[in-house]
Length: 330
View 1 (cartoon, one colour):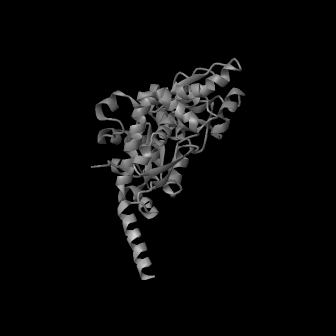
View 2: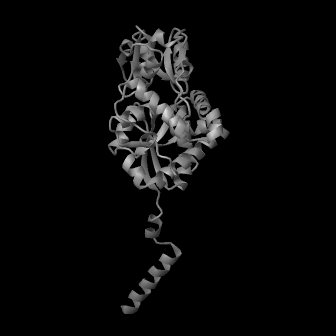
View 3: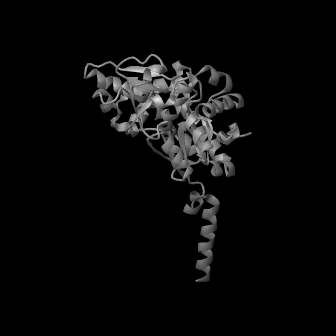
């Protein structure tokens, strides 16, 4: 009996040395995390699925579950409350929520400029044209922060914005049926699909870009819980780097990236995803990113963006760049 026990011990020791025991494999298992997109899935989110498909996140040590959300505000609340590990949200919404006490921090820039605007069936040439019109927007939609900033910059009365609370799933039907005059939309998400739906009814879609109205601020950023990032910045750094690889792959192989998105979401139209992704990739490749590098947020631009939000929304809390954005590796 004793010799059998010794034999088993020797086998166990050998297995440990060769790494064949299940326990040894478990120590290197990827960390399971949940990532929230800012909205229902569209082409803008293709790089995250590329990261899963190509193993970029797995190589970084993550087993990622990607889930859709209903707006930047929802994402911020979910991450702040521990219901998700990471998410993407509009920078202005992150700034506003941090000022109000949200314990989150952005750690990399996903889109350098906003793709937000207003979709309508008649031209909206300037911000003043919004006055007197019904604007559909979810309660957590980032445009509820962005449009007031634009109104403030153009010296327009914020109370003249006629918000119509609605779920994003009914935006199209509300506009096409004439129940609202416009809805908060993105050139890389909503517009391609809306154009298809409107064409069937013989209607023409117009899109007013906030960037064309002078809104110069970071678009979407990736964020996590403040305490988690400060205690373990290495995880956020690896996630950011894996996302960067996925974005770079998508830029080099846009058609394949769109096909991967549809592979994981079979109900989506490949042509629509391609159009959406093309718009998103444009917002990632700007003179600023060429100069400073993808994902980078300089102190100067952070301060300018934060000051713009503070002034427009009359935030009383003193918010600094380090409160909103963590410079990983510094």
